[in-house]
Image (cartoon, rainbow, N blue to C red):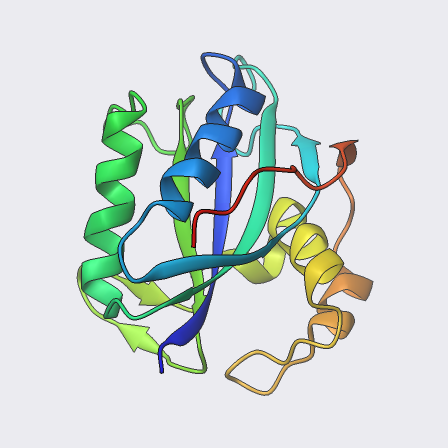
Length: 170
């Protein structure tokens, strides 16, 4: 059984391309979870303070048996294993950030998790990689990804490299 989940990955510290590739390997080794596909790697400008390096971003589609909060906890553990330090500074630099963008068709609004991800409809570094791997996607609220793309400025987003190639374990 299981469910398809879209994750947003981002890094701008400690060799960001390597961080994203390492995160993909960790996701591939996650219990009851398999990677279905991954977007290209994209370079994007930081959202928050501009005195930080540009980000490397990707969107990955996984299939998992994990319930939303168990998946969130597992993703936070992967972030910590890769040097993520949670600070009070919003949108500051980070070694690795993994966000649950969509969890099937579910809409979740709890103190721990909001899905669909609260900012995904305005973020070029989410929408364009998501469109790359799922151009026909319809969000849980009925909005088409293709329509969101038309309204979203690129803001300097560019493809760094094609979709990462790695050996799947599952």
